[in-house]
Image (cartoon, rainbow, N blue to C red):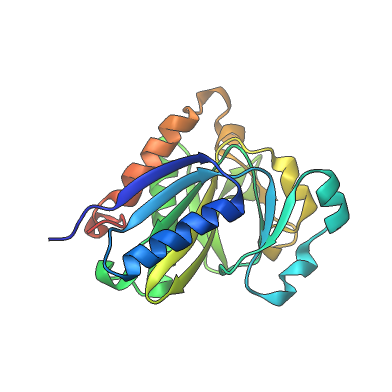
Length: 222
């Protein structure tokens, strides 16, 4: 019988420290241990994907970022450049994707579907874009990204994951071309819903509930 996926809320934790936690759990999962989903908020940090040329989408110099206390880290995830900060819900599923019936692309699309369902439950109409991974919605009539997705699959086990903008300071994205997509806005749940937005904790609960649903009902669970 498949074991339930553990969910661990790490609170606010530096990107590198959370990455180390991911790596420890990845090793556990690789040796047959329990799968897990980590939930975390990061202090301000800009991360670059595996592509060497993702640095071209950094607008602000590393020196200026350091003065602003924004870390700059090269990650081993897929995708381009992104920003993390307080008020953004980051989820790192560490699962054996084949055990849940996913190909790599199918896993990415499932993460998108989970975020779409979460936003729908919160009252936000959103959609995906066949030309750009992630989840998008309308903000003042313009297309805007509300969730970024970047993963790594190693030894058949997932790392990294999704970053859902709850009430993040959107000015942090001014230092980059988010995900390398020129002319695309970034938005957040709080900006769209205003006073109607649920609390951060309630938003987490909805996202986690959708993440751990059985895969047959569009979650990641068994």
